Image 1 (cartoon, rainbow, N blue to C red):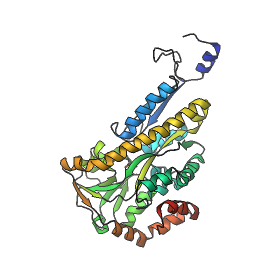
Image 2: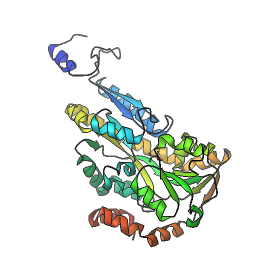
Image 3: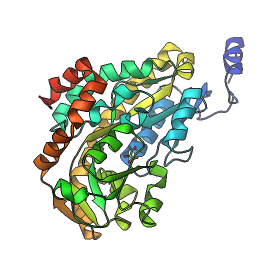
Image 4: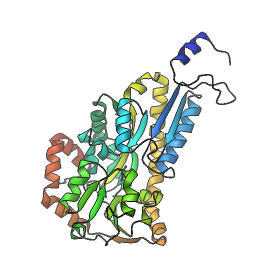
Length: 337
Ligand code: X2X
């Protein structure tokens, strides 16, 4: 590899030795960057992030090296979010509802029983509602979200005590929720006893019975092996949750335009692959988890909606989000309150 003067100057501004040869063609890494997530390596969020990293490397001719750190290796969600803001972490995926601690508007997709199906979810999140949220994220000045949100799925309640069929079954249940205001508000309204904890602590909190239950899509129950410490799975589908693929703004501003465009294109491309894979898993894992001993039941969804409505849950959140955002949500879901 012949080093031109320009290449040396460009290379001297990077963190890694630029003359490290990563393939037979002489290539130099210009951006060695870290991506962190809270999920096990086997979840499609991470397998697709690894595939994204590989394609980023090929298509950038080795200029971007995205290293994937799954399962809270870099810290729990709360830690990673503050690292992302300070620039100690370059990219991460995070639930919009946890991001709600910083960007309240981001929580809107988590309104209980709002999206009836995935058509509504993707129309809203790839449409005006998602755009509104990304704008609010960008308004932090320190972080931004790429266009196409990645999937987590519809969340269901699991626990070690009893099947949840009607809202009364949740009464007093010690339920772990992620650290986000919407979850606590919703499960208080349903009269459970919500305890916010980062995902990094969930398995052991369930195992030691610090909490009795939790709520997550089946792909997470399965890849994080929560079925080992939970008996009942009640198909509440109480909210849809996703993962904004986010970056540190200062770092991304340092990418030349061609690399910005490449990464933006590939994050969206892999979002679609990730969505398809997560959906297939969430739709098919019941049988597998049953064989492993979990007991599944359907729930009386209408009774949950009625209870939430009577508690003032919808009216409260309507007020918090404001008329404009709420009507943007209802444009996709139909009237909620
Ligand atoms: O913390 C959770 O439960 C998880 C993994 O679903 C989120 O990222 C919100």
